[in-house]
Image (cartoon, rainbow, N blue to C red; front, side, top):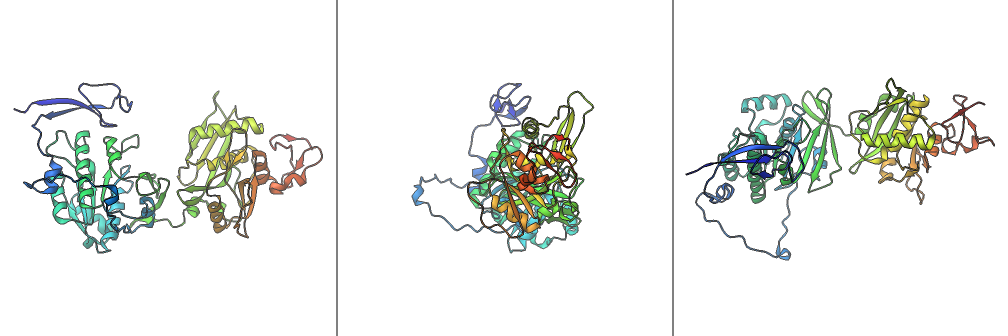
Length: 501
């Protein structure tokens, strides 16, 4: 006779314990254990084996094969219809690939998958869209609003994973989209849909289907309030790629970012814009992230500077803004939107120690315009220049772009793919670019671009604010001071302390 068995599963990593634990011994998460009640049954062949092989069929014992004897088949990697999505996936849709797409509610996950299904279907492939949360009528209404090819998509409105898997085995589609994994349930496993045990089993069943039938499967996953995919962490370990759809639901910009990819780089991003007829790709993200003042001839305002960043293999120019103001509290605030908080603290500390600035009574706010998040250290110099520009109320020389990592001693350290950065700068139309000083002279410089190698923060400040650029030493007097021709101010070598003329 079957008996109830009570166990506790960690919602973060899927670890099991016979009793409740306040802290998971595996992933060290607090308060993550949830009670699971199941019926003890005699062990038989698993559901995945019975369904994939066929009911009642004899299971063949796997044969051990030498790696040298494995024959490589030419897998057809086809396009998803979105070059931005292909870039993130590592070249396109891989047969047998298992991809998880997560994001906040209403961000556009289902819209992206529906448009991708339409593009793939128009290539002559059979696309199966498994709807676990919406009816076919609702999906048809959205498809007509998005103007997608509805005749290229087949809908299966089911939540029972056994029936879904049997339909996949019989139809053998070229692409399967599950919307969503939290809505699927397995009758042989206890718990409600969306619980740890249900997600764990359904994900394992779909993974075996994708690998054994060589069918690409895309899972849509909900996220928690912390921003992670709902369910056990094992779900992210199971799939081949994990994509996060980011963006503010009150704005049109959407960023598709990969945090795990067995087929390509995890540094690539896809840039989209949400329009009335669905998602639209942004072919030139640099112009999107730059304001009209940065692209025009009027010049930028104090506290604003353009940074040359790299996302994967793509150079992107972004505008970084800073605001320095008097603090009303004993402890001044440090706020960074789009950059790492600890990185901002480090840059401010270097500016105080190496250039003599005093931010002990001033709040510092830094923002990356456009909602992009920058993780690479090559944006350090741009953040520092923006803070100095706001603190001194001076505009950076028009047409200047900055790239460089700041060390703790105030030196400007080299950055990767520097040549790709200045090629993008020249393509957009900027005339000056600050780069770290290199041992070998750079080659392939466009004629309309002036490169200004800098070695220290003081050199960078001269290149950004001095009328003669990095060669401003020619304007220095014998006393070590020089005069800014635009404002008439006299500066010391540190460029931070104003002195009497």
